Amino acid sequence: MVTITRTPRQAATPQPSEPQDLRGPRRGPNERRRFAAFGYLSPTIVLLIVLMATPVAMVVGYSIFDNVITNRDPQVVGFANYVQIITDRAFWQAGRNTLVFTLVSVAVHMVLGLTFAMLLNTDLIGPRLRAAYRVVLVLPWLFTIAIVAVLWRMLLDPRGVVNYLLNTVGIDVGLTDWLGSPALALGAVTVINIWAGYPFFMISLLAGLQGIPAEMHEAAKVDGANPVQRFWNVTIPQLRPLLISLGLLDVIWTTQQFPLIWMTTGGGPMGATEVLSTYTYKLAFSRYEFALASTSAVVILLASLVLAIFYARSQKMKD
Amino acid sequence: MTDLVRKPLPVPSPGALRKQRTRRLQRTGVVVSLTIASLFSGLPVLWMLSNSFKPNGQIFEFPPRLVTESFSFDAYTAILTDPVKLRFFLNSYVVALSVTALTLLVGLLAAYAFSRFDFPGKKTINVVIVGVQAVPPITLLIPYFGLVVALRLYNTYPGLILTYMMFTLPYAIIMLTGYLNTLPRELDEAVKVDGAGGWTALWRILVPIAVPGLVSVGIYTFMIAWNEFLFALTLTRTEDMRTVPIGIQLLMGQHAYEWNQMLAMSVMGCLPVLLLFLFFQRYFIGGLTAGSVKL
Image 1 (cartoon, rainbow over the protein chains, first blue to last red):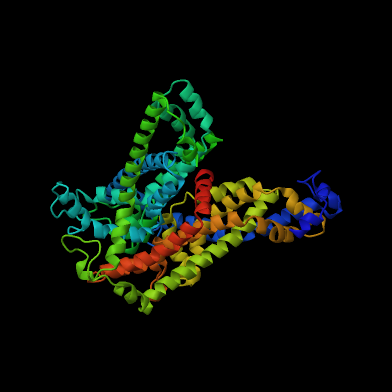
Image 2 (spheres, rainbow over the protein chains, first blue to last red):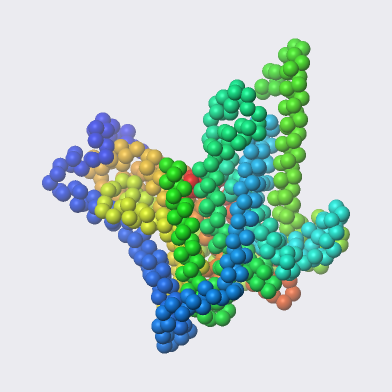
């Protein structure tokens, strides 16, 4: 700080982006600056090579062998693993479950997140009360997924408090085992995921709502638009880019969800909640089919890249 | 304050009265909706807290009670006096804090390069860093397992710390580059005119001003590392290397469920993130939204 006040600012301002000129060209400033930039970047580049490029190359490599890691003499089998994965019913079942789990979660996240954000954004209640509600509503998001899983296993237990409350208000569910029934388990884990994830939307959309200029609503009011029309013609168009990018981000995250499934149902009962990540994990670490698991991992990677390209497009549209 | 000014106004017109009435009605609607929403988010948390103070036998008692006569801290005492369980917490803190410190350091250096230098391949490296975030963890899991075993880092802190950095670093670089870009270049260039190098400019000038950005990214990084499950499960083996999320899973795998202890451990496991949120709410939300937009 002292340095700033001591230096005459004018000295730097004329050409702020090219201070090399002030030092004179004889030291080859561009060369030095390039070298310096790579100096600062070198830890990142090393990490990217060791922890990203290498493993991605490894997993693609693994996928063309008969088996790896536990196998001393792996044989190349080409695309045989891909054929096996693509024709595996359990893989498609896991894919379907992942899709349902993801689409329902993301849609409800968005609706709840936007509703709660709009409720929190009104000036009808005082700022203190609003802040208190905001803290309570954000709570689920501050919980580690492992903890969310324990908590909901307790709530959804046949003797748990959810069944008690439903029975008390007259919805007769008896001693339903929500997570243990093949027909209900996927719905149950989706509800848990909705509970755990909506605050992310809520907080982001709240910031988005606060960014909409008040004049736009005033102008619409003057034109005679009612609140519903203002919602569809002002709020939604203004939030649209944010909604798209949050939605795609959530799709990417939800398709990758592992701990929630693993700790509530483990993919069961009878594969009812098996998702792609638990399917792949089990292939590798329960059945020790590391090559097959790698193949599945590569297929998931390709699907994610398609999603990522959509995401990048949506970002570009926004700019 | 505005209410105080508005109240003594003499005889409001019928139109204003109606407006006031609709406003009161709307207010009630908002409060009712928010209260229902809060029950949805808050009741499970309250129930967790309540059950962590009960003896194990009362967790599923019928009808359920929020507070029972046998309210006690026994479950917490059991966790806090069990060296195995305390070790889970120690491991989580060591890993999460190391990941945070290293991510901030490495991320800051890279962000400085992106923000203040032009160099060949800048665009490509930038695209790679953004793109890396789309690689699903499950894809990396199997090669990491092979790699970590080969590097003799299986079941060690460095194995976990390095792994986690791959998930925290891209975000940190993107966020910090954005943050540094908002700081005028004149600041650091001015020191350089005085003869100091880029290194000095970074540490003496930029870092002190960039503290809010660093806090924001640091919180996010800490949360990711604190919550991580899949790699902690796969890359550690012995009980003394397990982190809190895996510790909770181990408790669930035991023959007889100690629900109250699991819940007590959960409450303690939430505490760091909860406190971070309460104290740094502004940074939290700022970092989160900026990240969600820029990622």
